[in-house]
Length: 253
Image (cartoon, rainbow, N blue to C red; front, side):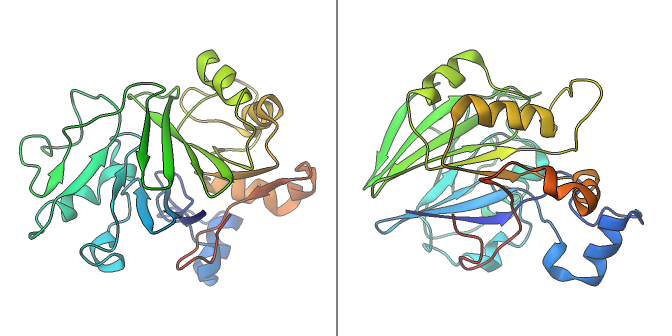
């Protein structure tokens, strides 16, 4: 089982439009430092599922029938805007499994096109897609949001973004599921006050300490965290790494 991180940025991405901070300046001069909207591809024994659809070139990256469906964490624009492009395709139906959200995103429920939203996940529900097992776990965000526990081929990966801390029920559940990899929201450097919608580094490290994965990967990264890391990356604990965008398995965990 392989997880490729297609995008690792927050809603503003990196570089931020109009920003000249050291992280944004570096990203303008080095394409490898750019961050697109947070998204991923999970592959397991022939199954290929997108996690979130914030990439605006998703129809160019993934030809028709090159993936089996979509695991949608939530319906904020930076995670769902690619659905607006996918829906007007033809010739096949794309299942979109995500949270129960009466609002959804834009007019997608009214005009879904080839997208099938008919089977939202319930909390802690497990679905089997061939050899890939997917369990939806609740997260804490400003919109109904799910993380996903991915199991297959002897590996267990938790993909948890967007969230600020973890609900007690999710923490307790995942503590009983020893993780090979935890991919976790960490949008900003340590803050003096508790953030409202996304983890800062303090909250992210607390979640990692609670779940004790073999490896932790920080994603949904904002430019302020990138700027902080230019001088402070040495403060990250062992087995905690910062994600970077990768295409065609360049950032597989």
